[in-house]
Amino acid sequence: MRLLDVRDKVRALGVPHPDWSVFQRIGDLTKLRRDAIRGFHPVNYESGLLLYALVARYRPAAVLEIGTGRGFASLCMAQAMVDVGAPGRIVTVDWLDYEEPQEWAIDEGAGPRVARLSRKEVWERHFPAALRDRIEQRRGASMDVLPRLEREGFRADLLYVDGDHTYTGAAHDFYAAVRVTARPFRMLLDDYTPLSHLYGVRRLVDHEIAPVFEAEQIATEGRWSAPKDAPAIDQAQVLIDSERVRRPIEDAYASRLIDARLFAYRRFRRVFAWRDQLRER
Image 1: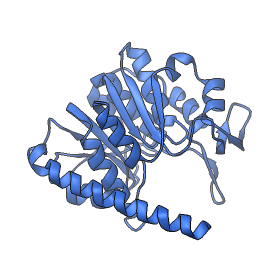
Image 2: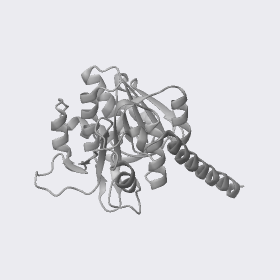
Image 3: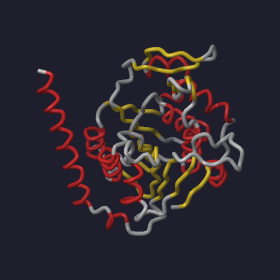
Image 4: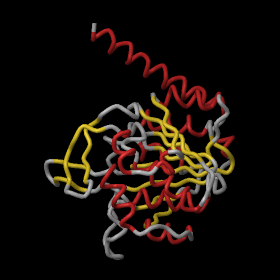
């Protein structure tokens, strides 16, 4: 799999983009983290720049994001749509409702803090309606929401998979996402990392995606302002393109095989949900 630095990939996409401070601001409002060792710190703001560049380059009519989180990726992609005047929309899927508070590390300009905030509070306070209106939020598990999108006839030409990072969860989201792709499509998968005991994305990519696609591993986190000769951080994102394949997609991912994979995962999740309900009684 080809390894690229995000700086080289953004340059190769050949599109103008805002100053880095724009992504820093969006990140400080929606992607800042805090832990006991490093305190407050940015986490992979470069992913927003990469997504911005992909949207600006390919101008997708429809984007699917699995895993809204606090909204960093959606807002960066919406910013690209507004900046280039593209008419696309973003459908983003998450467990948490738009108005549901969550623990939120944020720096609004007066210094970082942690509060209980909802996407609604932060988005409507800091981001214009022109961005928010491009984003359609769907609440629920991907195993429930994606079949509904498929039945609605939704098809995405850019997809960002950043949901459940276990192998079974990441595999479900990938195969379910394939079912709602347009042609051509591009898909970016987050958190390709050696920590295979924590994240299953690497196993999925190495064994089930890279043999089919001419995938690109793009080193992102901490790279934008790093010296050119600085060692790349192991964690990266993986980009695939339906026009750059080793095997025909329809042969590699036959519909009946995808059906079987999705059915097994959904049955597995529902059994666990049923068990948890029994324990709560």
